[in-house]
Length: 289
Ligand SMILES: Nc1ncnc2c1ncn2[C@@H]1O[C@H](COP(=O)(O)OP(=O)(O)OP(=O)(O)O)[C@@H](O)[C@H]1O
Image (cartoon, rainbow, N blue to C red; front, side, top):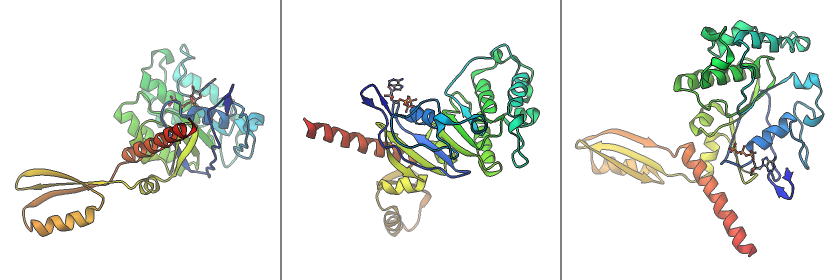
């Protein structure tokens, strides 16, 4: 993807299979939204090949569009409508695309309950809180029971409870409905919890692609060993926690309690990957001078 003379995506290549949950991670400006917008058909790529549900997104017809669900970063219209009224209204557009395997739309009350808005079904949308509005955005995205769902920072503004409900919802949608889900998030714990696969974008390139475990293995992460001995808490960082713990017990046969080994988190892995990419970029720039 090129804007003017600037390439913002370079050779971004990946496939996602049915029912897969893929998280797109990356620093601000990495190209996540641009990638999603191309897949949704909102932006035409300057070059390359894109197929979404067998179709070139820019040429998708209504039947194709009805199979997609989109939750954008934020939008604030329909303030005078009521929650149930809007979902019922939007759902009707999907009726002609209903199939026996995939009845469309979702039952409105079931959908409202699914996103936890039953108590606000008759509230005016303009009066919802930020988190409630975001729940409604998700409901709007899935009202047509899509085969493929795009979620751009879906949990921004959610309280911990709403976040957990949302995570359960994503699991249900992928496991029970077989929905393929592509989401962007800056919450690494969320990505780790939800995604079967993580793509890390930096500077418009995919710098890592794999399950959270596979990514950790790409970066030789250190582990933290935390233990209490004689009432004092100790922390040690090591490449080989097994050897360290064996040695620890050899040195102190008794008196060790509350032993914990913490592997590097996805956050550590992510930071290391992005830093490695940025250092490589700087080296390339210096070499070009
Ligand atoms: N219409 C446009 N014209 C020119 N450049 C653009 C345009 N839209 C986006 N860009 C640039 O493309 C790059 C990628 O932007 P994009 O919004 O895809 O990033 P992002 O990864 O979604 O970032 P964030 O995490 O901040 O949402 C940025 O450098 C941005 O400045």
